Length: 418
Figure 1 (cartoon, rainbow, N blue to C red):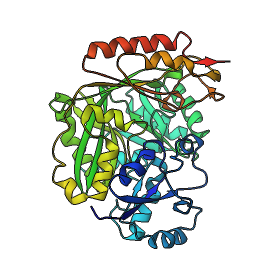
Figure 2 (cartoon, rainbow, N blue to C red; figure 1 turned 45 degrees about the horizontal axis):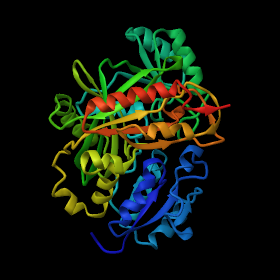
Figure 3 (cartoon, rainbow, N blue to C red; figure 1 turned 90 degrees about the vertical axis):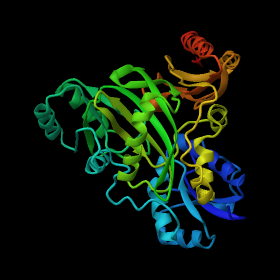
Figure 4 (cartoon, rainbow, N blue to C red; figure 1 turned 90 degrees about the horizontal axis):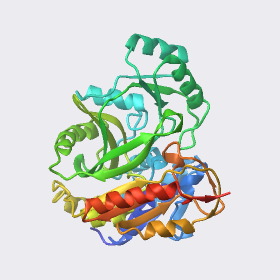
């Protein structure tokens, strides 16, 4: 690692908020660039205030040439996206500054779910059958010809379970179309097209990876557990990591390496979601950025490292990172990431009820997305979850018992609203 190295972080929101500290521990100074003036408020609330000097906190207002000139004076060694909103600008800045980064995504294969599926398929890998259109009549004709229900209907460019619908007929598809085209995605952009995809039957997983010069290190693979939510969309229930010798991990790992190559992910972090079907792994989607909503210090207690620190290490010392990047992560204990599910709506009057959650024997961390005075809505997708709770313990039975106690508390006044 070079002393006094400098870097650029684009949108240090969500998990990206932890990057400045992780890089500072490695002697790297940071300039922050906010990708636009219109970054969604739920992202802005996660910004690590105090992590950057005022002169090192810039906002991109459309003048890319001016921004590049300003950053070039600082001599950055690399550029990294802290959140999904910063991915495109990070790629453009890395290219213009002549530093390592993913090629500018002109084909939108790392953002548009249709282009993503086509790129993976073009690489000889399984991808879901997919249509992208802004016309409902075209979608209906495709669906009737395809004749395999249910179908997944979702925005072409978003994340999580945002406006993801599972449609059993054309009437439900029409409702989903209207809902999607009449709203914006999680990044705040208007939805202009809709993706209709094959429904993948199986078990869903996600994997976090870090790449250096096209060499990929798969840091961790987790199994999703979801439950039906209101309106038919699935909501996240909890997630648990796999051991390296888990049969599912052995199937997913080589497939994911090919996916990352197909999508042109050569530098930095990626977060990929994969369905393990009866015919093998199939990509759901991939984001060229950190996993969202994690607590690095808790994950560190399970793996001995975490996605944020691995990213900081790979970017600041790529040669050193490559010497051990092939070593699989080893689970040191049991861990469960529980998404909070609110059954109520109203204005939050108190958070004192979470005291009983912190007293659970396996409690390891809590990340709330709401505060006193905020309006809480019933959880219907990832965006309306009030937060996450980590349970960590050597005894998986204790984790299960505490998980059940948490869910019971949610139905028994955990969320104080009026």
